[in-house]
Image 1 (tube, rainbow over the protein chains, first blue to last red):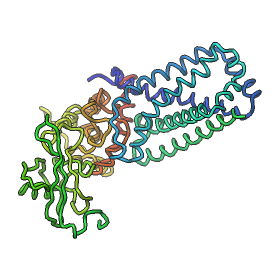
Image 2: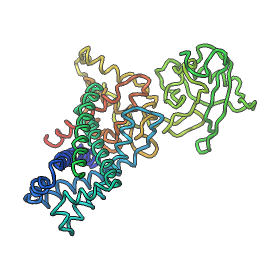
Image 3: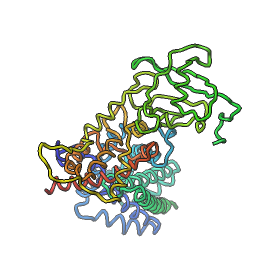
Image 4: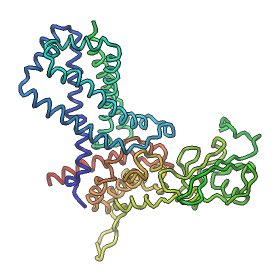
Length: 210
Length: 257
């Protein structure tokens, strides 16, 4: 029998699981906190937050290696995993079974959201200097359109759920939580973290509104 | 249990709605049957009574319903089927506690042989894949008595020894089925049991290498339906968490020596 570290199935699954937390989950938390500073106004947001990020050393390398590549790997392998789902939420109407299905559905939803989100911010900024110069104004222009605001709100909530639930199941996958009681306790911790991130994220969205 | 609809003594009948299938490759159909009420019927005894006089509600005399049963005390696992949408052993499913009509279907996810009989050889395949046994014999005298374990460890392991390979956990699992290679929860729980055994632990690394491969532990989606439907209340999801920990440590040992 092949050893675990020679088994690509095992390694890919564990890599997929790890990437969801590091760096993707960590980046999402940072991203939501960072953008919650929108509530401090345009000059602070453009002058402090965006300017700091745009001036970061090796920014392009970091964006590709720490954000884009892990996201593509996590999403691509996640799509493969989701094809194994044969969900019966009404026959087995348990919370964990619902979370199981929503984890896969939210993953697909997040992927669609991210294509739009990255497209209308980072990618659009590549050829439109005004987007880079006044990101606050650009975001305000976007989020004052109700359809886009709802898109962002749903994308935010799906992402936060996906992270919180993924963290809870990650505890089982890696063996942090074994007993049912430990899994329940850690589930509450993850739910709390999810609510906290959702509040920070919503505050960030509202901060862009005039 | 008086609150269950359609089950008042006045009904004086047991209404069975059974999903039937003549051959593995033929299409299924439904038939309804009514039996005279008797107290303390379970689903197997109701099917036995039906077999004596297999006449549908429409009055047609049909082939008797085919199903499996054996021990009649919920230890052999042979009579597991879908009863009102829930996978469970028919022998311990009491008619007085079931809503009527009682809908009987073959255990899902497994290929139907006939009526309520399914081919559950995939369960045994899973046990074979993970070496769900203990090598106790050698060609030499080991000069030792049976290794002793603590009462606490015994009582924890005992929970897993109750598995009767009925397949209910697999029937409820959204990752298990003909579409996928996943071995299902029951073989994983036996790895937990055998790895903890004082003699079985000698093959712990082999078992862990078997369950980290395709169709093993990583294919669990943590929907945790298994632990909800297990008729023997086996802590299947705790086994999966413990095996996750064992697999993590094994991977570190494989990597670092």
